[in-house]
Length: 95
Image (cartoon, rainbow, N blue to C red; front, side):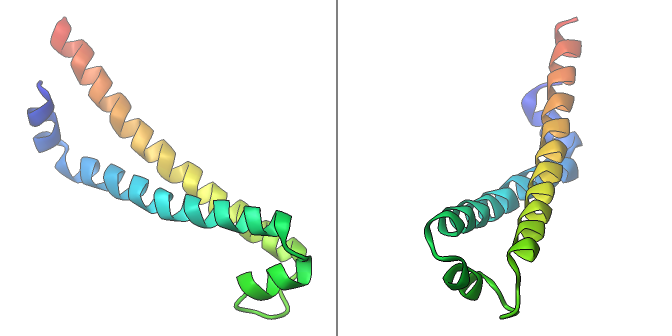
């Protein structure tokens, strides 16, 4: 099946993979900025800027960051699965 047929057949999955990557772009930017500022700013200043809850601790921030990174990984795996599906259909096309 050619590329157009593939995207037509797997329209929903393809759209979700694209949305996952778009969400990862935003979330990766957040994590990048947060980690950069975590490194550069005094801890109290950093926590005040990144916390909705003024009592957020450094440990809570680290847990939040790990959760965010886990979501990025999950979404990337979903997109990877979709691209691998296309790779498989390309191999089948050659055979």
